[in-house]
Image (cartoon, rainbow, N blue to C red; front, side, top):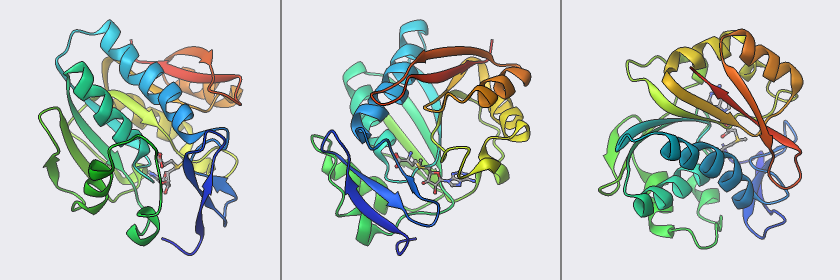
Length: 221
Ligand SMILES: C[S@@+](CC[C@H](N)C(=O)[O-])C[C@H]1O[C@@H](n2cnc3c(N)ncnc32)[C@H](O)[C@@H]1O
């Protein structure tokens, strides 16, 4: 996918992509890196590590897109010396001819091009800490024997992609998690929070990244 997409700069100077047909950005225009760090690294990865002694754990990302969350996770777990099996789903990969022009400042550019050029649907070892699998599939069609400790829920918002925010999808996400695992998302819509609660999640409303009042963490207790 390329024709619909163009690179733009977000307010923290880092790039993101704008998708024209649905009028959506891949990240917050207030800053893509600050949003990913706030929602997925701080409220997701680091919170899990603080409360859990596991040396190795599994992360599922919904929406690989530009690969920013994977890159930041790789960077962080090398520092923290934890082993992560990172699985990410993406039905509409972005052409490398566009991706190669993205600049995520201060992030390892070798790993960036590596994860984009690796084969889909194979397990890859990136380094001693980061095992990586990207699957070209929709969440709705994905089945897994593996359960996850953290889900990075980074789908486009309910206004443009309503089918990613249904009770059926939330039941699936619940079943994909280990107990004591959780999902984090930038979305804080009241209906989403109530629907996640209705499938069994214990919900937390957390301060959002710059430009958003709140975000959500959904816990499987
Ligand atoms: C808000 S973007 C976030 C992308 C990515 N996390 C990033 O940092 O660039 C949402 C992503 O979800 C993908 N997506 C769309 N439909 C999907 C589906 N049914 N299942 C999984 N991912 C989907 C889109 O193609 C897009 O890459």
